[in-house]
Length: 376
Image 1 (cartoon, helix red, strand yellow):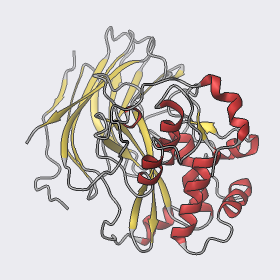
Image 2 (cartoon, helix red, strand yellow):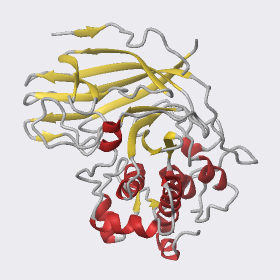
Image 3 (cartoon, one colour):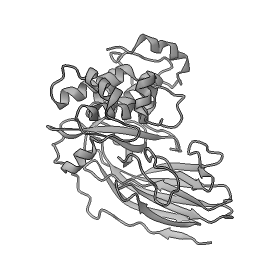
Image 4 (cartoon, helix red, strand yellow):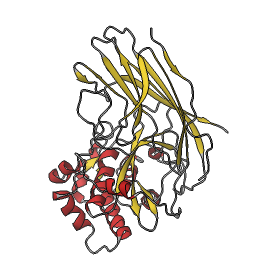
């Protein structure tokens, strides 16, 4: 057995603290996935910067015996900003494992290769990360013009012309300036799109198809991609941020955190826009839709509902630090893969001679993700 280990390596030696929904949606109410209401009697959602927390995030992949050469990729937290600091990575495997990058967008991952006939292939990856909440009023940050240009470009699943551009212009009609346009698009997405629990995983983020079919139901990778695409289409830099929930919400909303020991399925995509007066600004219209659809047994369709208003207001310009970001990349070609580029990388992936494993099918692609908070 070729056992590969990598001791914790600190990448950061010094960590410095730096409108109602359409009536037609009622027809889909039967499909909701009930969840209990938050325990708090008076709903509140007000993330504040400075609440730094550290987590060890462990991803373990166990595959069936290999019949052909097989490769696994496990994403690592690659986003380092004033709200997140990746600290260390470690891994162990009975295959040939190493850290790789896509080489273009800074996506870091552990890849493990297994020869045909490996009886119990596995790889286990541990990442330590430090994260905090983001709140309105943070100081503006200067950004490299090339980064902003990249945040305006179309991708395979997020075009910025045709029906996307037409929709964005309608949504922002009369808006002047980037902040007014972003506010209009955020409101439009919340009022016109909806959470669809039946969608597998986090969705695909194919916004052109969503708009052409009129089916604006989806999950976070769909709804936040729609928000990002509409912003880009009217000249406002925006990007998806792909990650995973690590802990319960401090504000009692069950849908805004993960209270389970297993985080398998806790992946969550957020978004951010670059505003001239504020720099990169967090947004999450998809989580507003999730609370509306799944926080209580009934589907709440009004943002004026006392349960919804705090998150509708709060997730414009803020998000909670109980979440870890992997990357902001689109159209990612995994190093060594024979398959096509992926729309995004937020899940462990595996491939053999027959093609991709189904990352949503645990009977053939078994993995478990867990997190534990590390106290200072």
